[in-house]
Image 1 (cartoon, rainbow, N blue to C red):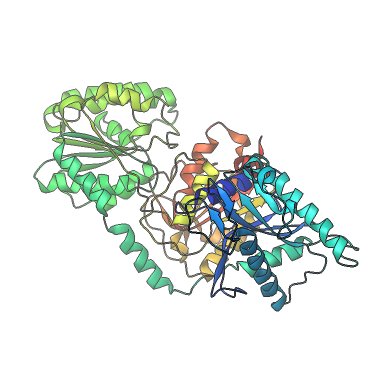
Image 2 (tube, rainbow, N blue to C red):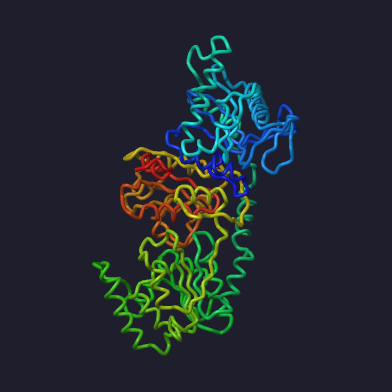
Length: 566
């Protein structure tokens, strides 16, 4: 699908056809262009084709979509579609004019169209038009699609193309004598000619300043969130990745300190804790770090033992930390407690510890918590929210919904691949016209060459190496960590929560990079044969990118997440 999303403002019929074509099996080699503008329209100043389908060895089909609940034609020849004003120009004429305009455009650019059926049809998505629309010399019966075709979109489109090709063969001498086109190369050229990929040139410095300005500015929703934090002693902020939760947590901590209070800002991930600590290093009276770092400090330990296992982190360390906290409770209990990534922390054992860190405890204290309960609970329990509600029932809820991190096309791609429901809808940032790149690789294939090529292309687009991050669901076996490619080994550095040195780019596991983001993100090793948390890792990894996203996905995995089944 080009683009890979359907705008919320699209008519309901276009949304239905988009979803039907997107989810249809057996269309992997099709190119489907949605809402194609036609500047050189044969009749109007400009026009639009709702869908253009380019199917190898089948043809090119231009579809006009009508989602009206009623379709009628008056005695005077005018069409009446739903409540729209009568018009002499019917849907079949609209589709035909768009088809001829597109055909002429392709021929003028010397695209070879010999033996390529170029057809048009009308899809009535709300009525049974195939059985109720009368015959007419103005259209063929095979040019009609209707509501019954939505459940078998691929077969319906192929029916139109097959019967259309037969019609052309019966009227044009020798048409299709050598086989029906387009072939794969021609199909790709047709799609690239009709909707070429390009980037309006913007200098790297301008793009960087624009991004930083957009990401640093609160919008109305975030202001309402901060007002909610001021009006309630305890608030639980929820929302999917990219809605500004970590930014709000840091801003809330600074506001608490500005009012003369002292307390803590804790999170789960080590790299995020390091990043927050650097950003808030000058905040007097604020202790910043991870939950486990704070436990180790209170337990009087410089670090975990070499043989630390899950029992140590989940039982032994909390008990030791509670003992240390009891000995120094007067100076350790804060006026407020702010917790980011709470979905990974909300267990009874950890909440027992957090309860003693703030005056009034979790029930009555000044507690602000931020969490993503969509798909980010990689470490925590699926019942984390219920456990938290039991321990802190007074928490007011505030849901964040506006994505202020990702460009719209990245967010829509996350919706598609991660199957988010309802998914991202509102974006604070403007679309830049660049689609995320989803690249297939075979299981066991060395991805190093692909990785180097992607990095080179990002550099050509103006991204500095320091703005690029390579993420993977696996650790030491990831392409970035294990590659022997000389240039990659020279520039890659493991992420540590700080900005990389000039001339270096960071790599990390997706787990470790939770809560952070980067201008350009390359996610590698996406193979779902490794574990049950793959979908959550996919969601987290893809949402780290603010401006450019590239994902290397194993072929069978891509087939599954695109709706092709197991």
